[in-house]
Structures are given as structure tokens and as C-alpha cells.
Image (cartoon, rainbow, N blue to C red):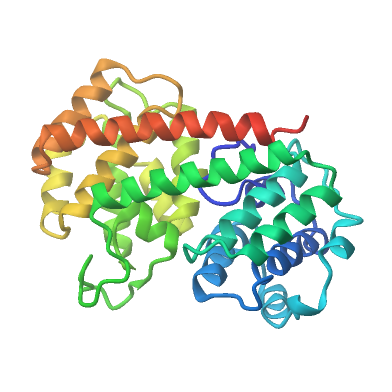
Length: 327
């Protein structure tokens, strides 16, 4: 796996996983995140979930490491002590990425407490990161939060609403969705058969120009599948799927029996992201997205809004790459 700087969760976690950083090294980084996000005296459930979904799942933290971090006394540690020997051999500027992750984790509960912000700025000062860059990173997170709220509005994601809200579970083997799974798929629980059909539809759309390119396959395997906890077996089935000879109508007909409007919209969103992963978006792929929208009964205005959302996220990703690729 090559780090691309476009991972949906923590950029550091993606780099650490890609370059096989030893656990004893990334644990120090994680402790720093805990100290900063816990500077207001507590760690909220949303902050803990962000750490698990966006970081620990990506670096494939084992049970022992998770238990150690769960019991870590972040209130007794000074941030400066953790930052002294923090250094990683990746193309990522890990000091800037640490601030970015710390702000994201601190804001996971939609509250950026003064104590958390003060801890971020103190860490930045200790790492000799200029104040303007620290503010730029905070602004980047603000932008991403605004885009996230737009995405949730388009996909009608109401995570805290009582009742079924999203996807009603029928498979006894389903499992609870993480934050990224809820945001990317629009469901609270995940079923393997749904993941399989969803992946087949992505392959047909991305392959509408005759080929699912290597970069498109890599996006599915290393970005989408990691973010949404798709099993290795389902990933293999999706990538081996005969997209050239299968019908988008048949796959979506099966999906339509199972999913509400929010998942239909996320399918278009992820199809556009996958189709554009190779920096190309030919007319055949655009037409396939439009056909999928029609089959899913998603109106044209929503479809175009989703396209603009993807392009906005690409611009934000370029800004992230400028800030975080080592310099």
C-alpha cells in the first residue's frame, strides 16, 4: 500500500500503516492525541470513537495496545514530554499531522474547548510550528467539518435521531457501523451482502469506460474498504467481479429492495470518487453515474450536488497534501 494523502480518516494512521511503523512508536503519537483531546478533563464517547475508527482501526492496533490506551492516564502526562522523541520515517510531516489529528479528535464531539485549543497551540509552539500554520490547520479542519455537514445533509444522515433512522437490519451476522461507515454508507449496521452489491455497482460504474484502472481498484481496496470495514473476502469478490458483462440494472434492482434514500445517494457519491480516483472521469463513467441515479430514483439536482461535493473534497485533499507531505 502506498500512502496517497487522501485517506478519509487520520493521515498519520494511513502513513504509519503503509510504512509499517512499530506500535511502540505510534503509541506515543496516540498518547499525545489523548493528552490534547483530554485537556478539558474528559474524553467524550465521540472523541474515543474517532480515535478507534480513524486511527486504531487503520494501524490495526491489537487488543493489548487498545487496552493500554483505554487505561492511559492522559491527565497525568505533560504534552511536552511526549513530543520530545516523536519522529517517524514516513513522507508525512508528522508534526503538522499531529496537530490536524488532535484538532479533529478534539472536535469529534462538536466542541473545541478552550483547554483543548490551548493544548494544541502549546504543542505547536513546542514543535516549532508557526502560529499561522497552526491556525491554517484549524481552518482546514473547520472546512472539513463544514463539508462533512453538507455531506450529512445531502445523505440525510441523522446519527443521533431515535428510531431506525437509517438502515433496518435483517442479517443476524450484521455488525455495528463505525463513524466512517455511517458517513460513507448511510447506515447504522453493516451487512456483507449489502457491501457486496454496493461494491459490484461501484465496479460497473468505474468500469463503464471499459476498464477499472489500477488506481480505481486501489481506491476501493485501500480507501473505501478500509473506511467501511469490508472483509478481505468481500474485497476479493468485488475486485474479481465480471463488471464488463454484468448489468447495472440487475445489481441496482437488488439494492433497491434493501436500501433507503441515504444509501442510494452515498452510492453515487462513492461511485464518482472511485471513477475519479485515476484523475480521469470520461463521458462513459459520467453516463453510468447518471444511469445509476435514474435507476435509484435520485433526482438530477441531487446528483449534480453530489458531484460538486466530490470536487470540493478533492480540493480540500490537495490542500491537505500540501500541508502534510514532508517539507
